[in-house]
Image (tube, rainbow, N blue to C red; front, side):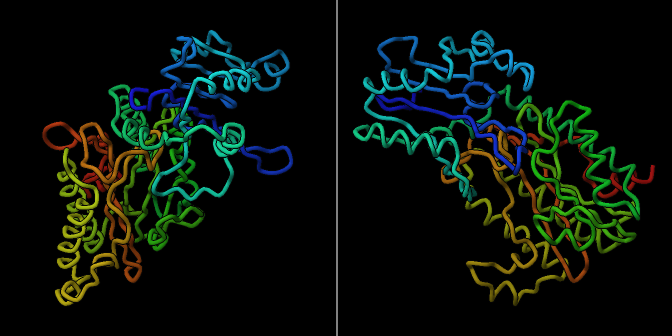
Length: 412
């Protein structure tokens, strides 16, 4: 609210419940912006912020779906007004059916309306959202109002995590650790990728996670060279490695882990060489995540680190580097994705990317080397918090990553 223009009003909508077909729907997932701002984790909820409202009680309003006995029997009771206040801290609660009338009255006092458009750099949404429909309706009914964007404000404030958020993210990482340690005693030649997925899901849910923070990648052998491999339906074979990009959510906060382990419990000499090269890049890249670092420059430095390792592994030679295309450097043949992204309420979270990094931003660090000709793809990933001074704090510091430790645990 402190960043909004004078005489302006901002509106945030819940997500829709999305249909599958017939009477089936997908499980409800709250829009992370309204959840961040209010804690309201219920469908058909609207948050209105109007710092300059003439009536002080209308400076923060939460509209919620009215509950009744029928809903209580079939779906479970929805929030009462008192519960909505307890959860959100917002004193003024109205039923959703009152929204149009109250919003019209407020708009007579406002000059500008803030719309919550999706401007995430990875977004590729084709479905019309509840937010989209509201924006369309609002423009038709209030054509004389100026419009502004909520997203730049949210990118700034959501990108820097509060202590309470870091606690929840640490909890998600701790649950992920339990799942990974469970796997180390389970994986062996002949196990199916989906069995590994099932073990993880069991461990996550029994620790009060809703499950996976994102679709799990359980990729054995050459499947690891498909960056977004999701089939998870092949056998894990003796001599292959198993790449697992899989992590738990907790209280809507994500963790994001990748580990690559030998299916039979022992790395070959070559596998260990490549593995340790990826680990060195991860460790050195992590040191670069300090206040003041620019995201684009950071990725260039990570490219240099990876180039050095690929030369050492014999995958590149000096001529490859000297003749490389600056738009697609030589190392990209074996490491084609970025090294880091923001993480928080979304796995690919909000956060400023064109301005210098700040303390309490949380980033993944996830280099990889992918060699289809050698039937291997290795990626290693941790989540780290940028500190005001010194090295980043690794939220996954207790999750095994050294090759020798993984071998020891798999053969215990």
